[in-house]
Every structure is written in structure tokens, then in C-alpha cells.
Length: 227
Image (cartoon, rainbow, N blue to C red):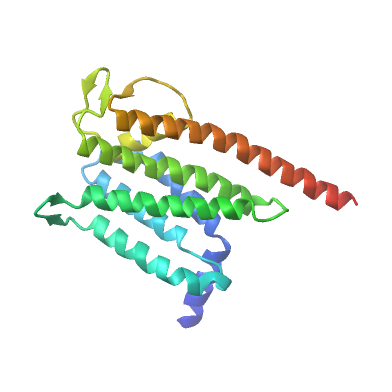
């Protein structure tokens, strides 16, 4: 049993970028479908929780330093999935904000890993993609928190949005991140507009800088191989 567990941990550590990428793609792809199901939002939150857990998987040499981060993330996931309420109301917005903060830390770690090696392989490319997807997915949670805290921060067709859920937040986040500009959902308040500008600028700068960085590393690697 111990040997099987150790082998599973080793496999997860060796393939953590692939696992994380798969979970992120599934979360983004299933969001619209799950929104139509009665328990779809709960399933989507479980997918996000698994995604956060995947970000805590560390290689063997980093296992000790990552243990505390894993415990913190696991506790945040439990609090996020539990239907807790306080005298001030639901804990949902707070835990969603905490989840997003964890995701941004994970995105920074993935980005650091993506540019940490002079040789670019599939793992480093997936890490660069994971950083982008993590920001898009979990900024979707921030959009839900903003609309829930300050109603009518976002309007759809000039009208208030009756039920702005996580699938809607993820959709609007990626539309903004990729600067598609469909215009079906419009930020109205200063906070919403400021976040929309930040996300759009980040999305464009990230793609430009990351592509240039990866291409330069690839060219440098090929030059070393030719020498």
C-alpha cells in the first residue's frame, strides 16, 4: 500500500503540468454544460477544487516546503465547498477570493517553471499554458464576487443580470483576457472597468512576452546544440 501511494505521488509529481492542464481544460469546457444541470455549480466547484489541489503537487525535492501550502489549500477547498454561513452572510465570496489568490500564486509558480530551463519541452510549454488558464479561470471567480458584492457591476444587453454564476464569470473572464470584445456583457462600475482593463492588458502582454521568451529559449537551445 505504501509503495503504491509513493508510486502515485511520484507519477503525479512527474506529470503535474499535464494533470493540471487537463483539469483546467475540462473545467473550461464543462462550465457551460454544467450550468444547465441542477447540481452543475457544485460539480464545477469540485473541479476547481481538484485544480487547486493539482497546483500543490511538488517534485520530491520540494515536497517538504510544499506540505504547508498543500494543507492551506486543502483547508480552503473544504471551506469553499461546505455550505457555511455566518451572521454576516454566506462565506462563498470570501472563499472564492481566497481560491483566486491561491490560483494566482500557482500561476506565478507555473510561469517561473516555464522559463526556468534553457531547454523548452512539453512540460514547460504546458506550464506556460497553465499560468494563462489559471488566471482566466480564477479571475472568473473574482467577477462573480464583484457582481455579488456590488450588484449591476456588469450588465447584459444594458439590463441587470439576474443570476451571474461561475460559468458566466469564466466566460466573461476569457472574453476579456483574450480581448474578443463581444460586448454582450459590459462592466459598468469603476472597479469592474478597472479589472477589465487590467485583465485585457495582462492577457495581451502575457502572450507577447511569453511567446518571445519561449522562442528565444528555443533558438538559444538549438544554437548550443549546433556548437
